Amino acid sequence: MVGILGRKLGMTQIFDEKGTRVPVTVIEAGPCRVLQVKTIEKDGYLAVQLGFDEKKAKNTTLPLIGHFHKAGTTPKRFVRELRCDEPPQVKVGDEVKVTVLEGTRWVDVTGISKGKGFQGGVKRWHFHGLGASHGCSKRHRAPGSLGRACSISKGVPKGKRMAGHMGDRQVTVQGLAVVRIDPERNLLLIRGAVPGANGGFLVIRKGLRDYREAAKAARKAAAGIA
Image 1 (spheres, rainbow, N blue to C red):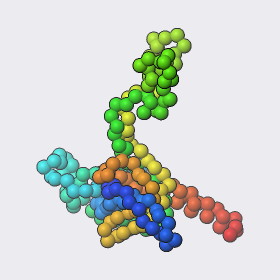
Image 2 (image 1 turned 90 degrees about the vertical axis):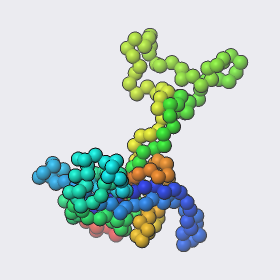
Image 3 (image 1 turned 60 degrees about the vertical axis):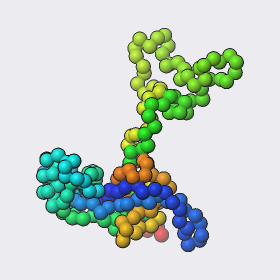
Image 4 (image 1 turned 45 degrees about the vertical axis):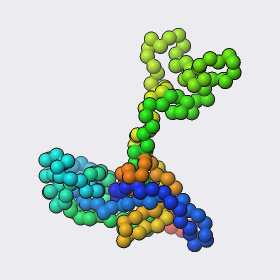
């Protein structure tokens, strides 16, 4: 398995062997159920579909109930696919626990960032705003010109930083260090912060940094470098 699904429980701190304080995020990682295994022959790509967190059947549509029943499990609230580079070794109905990340040093975490509603350019894009002198009247946090030479008859330029909805979007943080794994309580402790509020769902994948370090070590071994 290349990853697991989980839920952010919150942040705390622990102390390592040297007595150094380490800020960590506590994640409830699994257990998850394998709902579907996708193959190149049938689906055109390799992936494993996982389900996490129980959901009431009365709040689930009949097609999804049938999909979960085919996997031999109850309805799940959070369902995501994890792409694979090699044919997965798991089968439909298998249980995936946090132990799949044992031996992993780095992880990439994907979640939905905190929503902050409709915000202006100063808060959303960190604009400096206009001066606070007597010559500026009620325009201190104005966004300024849209950047057109003559007029805005051609519309607003694509990608223009303006006021709008802030947050509540998918964010991935890469290269987070795995501090501790607690298999008995299905807990994963990661150094630093992860996207989203407490209680939000997360996708935890083995970090690209792990694969890069493994490839670098393989190249050194092939070249005979210690």
